[in-house]
Image (cartoon, rainbow, N blue to C red; front, side):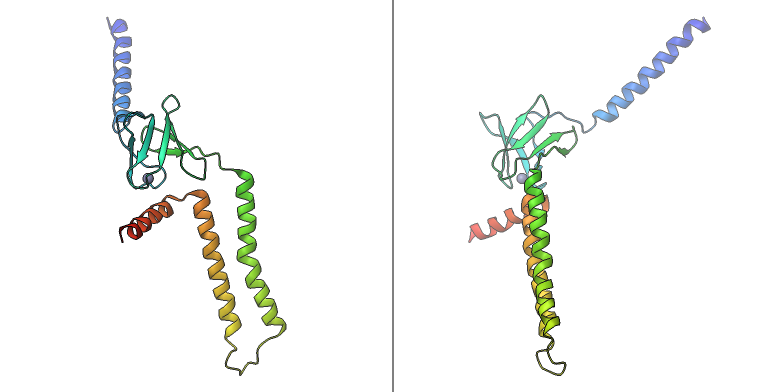
Length: 183
Ligand SMILES: [Zn+2]
């Protein structure tokens, strides 16, 4: 009796744990389908939902259009300069982007040159022909170098945010467009 019961008990407790794990896993888990809404992978602010009579989804905030691949549980943004894809894990989006590596390298190289070179050139010229110490404009080269660095850095930061489509940046851009559009 004992020998007969023991395997049964084991299998029972095992299946019990399995069910518990499955239940825990199932809480909040849902597949990608056209009947539900999901947080937008681009702006991480709006909700994407299926468009009526279309195999596409749209965000109610940034208005990006996505096509879904339900078999692969992924969405692809259709109206962006960057060809971006995200995979739905059941809980959140996972980037599956094939960002153009050549373009990325060029952007990083040009960006680095834009940030470093102009301040260095100004520093070199102010170092070669330094202003007189007691002159009123002695502060100018330092301020000019700082201003050059900040402005070029801001431009390159914008370029990178646009290239990588950083969610915070995308959300800010949509808010700004909304504010300007409402006027
Ligand atoms: Zn969005």
